[in-house]
Length: 184
Image 1 (cartoon, rainbow, N blue to C red):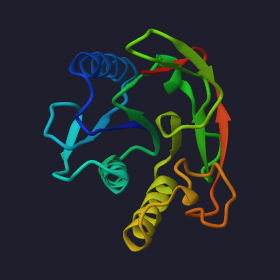
Image 2 (image 1 turned 90 degrees about the vertical axis):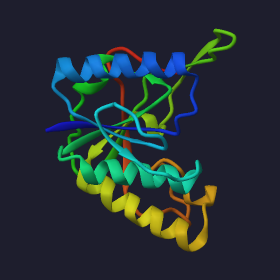
Image 3 (image 1 turned 120 degrees about the vertical axis):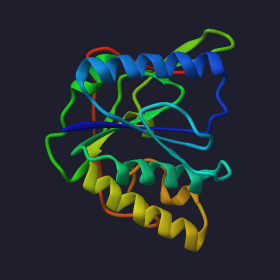
Image 4 (image 1 turned 30 degrees about the vertical axis):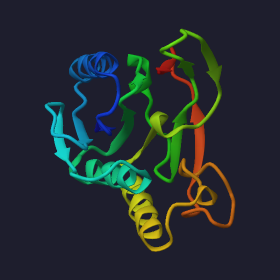
């Protein structure tokens, strides 16, 4: 089964936030994919988990883990509040249970200028992964950050580097949806 976890700090421009959520809800209904949202303010979007925490990296990781633990889906798509997801993004199924998979078909759009660029990159907002692997990773990430503090040396996107300070030895691969997501 597939599921969506959606996380937000509730600080995005409301017009963009509503547009993104409407698009994601429409896709989820059409494809029958449940949404679990984790937010810093209560909201009516999917099954919502409200975390009364201050915005920051540790909080973000806790939001992700909370949504992962509430979801009952086998395969999870990470979705962020400032990304317009194309329906084809959710057609992907990870071929193995031991890696994080990243949709590398992304355009980044500056909402102020309208300028857009295409990147081939692995970012958290494009993750598709088996839930159990993600839970294991984020539990360890939170444990480390609570003990040592956050450091970019540990990496931000799971499985994307081999530095000694990484959280774990999980690997990653990329894929490209038929049409791109737009990161605003």
